[in-house]
Length: 299
Image (tube, rainbow, N blue to C red; front, side):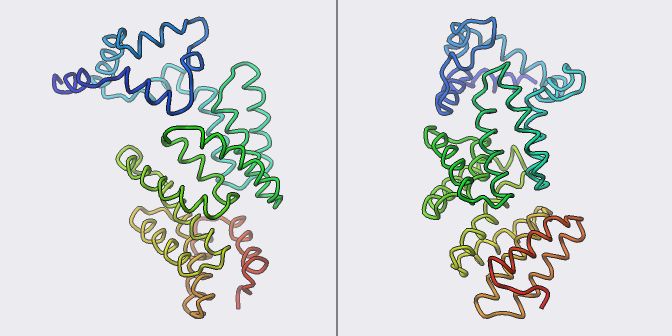
């Protein structure tokens, strides 16, 4: 146990917190809790309150518990209101559910009436983008995406939440911007592999890049990224993204005059969606194949 305490004591916690805060574009005032003063944040960043925080982390380590689990328990085994709201947004996006997204937006409005939170304001813009895309109002989706992009551009560095945020607007941004930024994002994602081994974010980036190049009719590049996504999904057992990536590879192969092989990939993709009971997603793909890619399916 002394080794862990020694590790904590070597860490410059205050300096790291300050760097992350500044990279996220937040002032000390932005992160000061209600009924507290900005000087408290200064003391933390200048290591004047280091011993308390280090001791608390060490105690949690001794009882083999993460900080997130501790917060969940002291909140009577419930998510905090913000964590619950963000979970609702993720689920609604995952299920392509417009009604649930609109409900989540209203809850966000109610939340920021009581507590100004930059993150929730950004999440609201993300919701609006998702709704516009699902309603096929692509012009309005671009407007909301550019607002989110302006926020991301203002930051010095991206962490996991910002990487996920960019993922949500990729489809509505110009190709050149997405292409360049995605390479930076994919490198940053690699830093989180050990922390979030079950995350699908890298899979989705690769799949979204394949979608981008399909729309640009750059089928070789689309096939490259969809193939990378398939290989990664197979290694990590991520079957939703796998089904999408099979279909995208199939479209690319058909457009590259490898029709029989392409239809086999599309068959595999639809079979994957059937097995995991994603009927809405399958219906979405049927429309995409015919209306966007001029592919009749089934043959």
